[in-house]
Amino acid sequence: MTTKSIKNDAMQSMVEGALAQGSKPIAEVALLNKDAFARIGNLVNGFIEAEGLLFEGDTMMQTCALGLAKHFGVNPSYEFWVATSDSWKASYLARVPQANDESAQKAWERLAKRMYKECMLEKPKAPSKDANRMSAKRAEEQAKIQAIPDSQLMELVAEYKAVDNFKDAEKIKKEIDRRAKDKNKGVEAKVKEAREQIKKSVNKVSDLALLNKILAMLPKSI
Image (cartoon, rainbow, N blue to C red; front, side):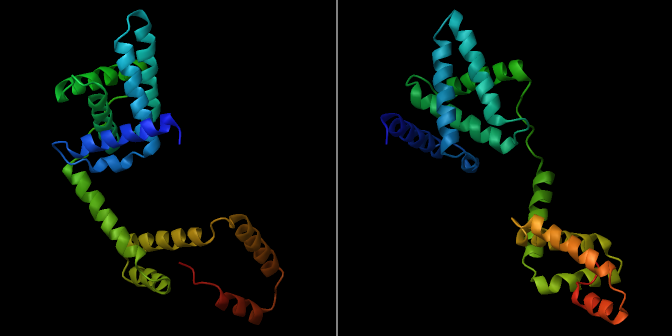
């Protein structure tokens, strides 16, 4: 392990410790991996250096702003933004002994403002309580569907269709498709080839009894 990696690990531990001691829970920190922590630390180093320079500092600040934008990507989630912001400020506090929560927040705002100037990227809106509630409801519903055994899925589709509940039938059909894709992962080309071969072979069959046997072997249309 190099001296640089040891230093980065130590700094990451300091940042994580500062986050854990914050006044609010930082569950979002799980959104950041080791590479992200190191990247944020490097951005803080560049920011601090840029603010200490005069003419050359503007170019370095621009580089930091663009680096932060690259870290966020095109459409970052609110949770990822908060995790990054909290990590950046904790890293800033760890590197600047005279800094406090207020000065770290202002430093972050200066960098975020410069990032907006460079590429129009700004903090996403926080999800509403209703959106969070609906998201949790969908996740709970999906978990229930995923727990249904394979042998019962086709029966459920038929039952839902029998009472004109096409909305729930469609949800089950999507789960069937999802499981099929999981099973065929890595062999999609072979599956496609086999399906095409079956079509060609069936088109040549004129024996009704044989066609009925083939039909009985296939899953019922949903």
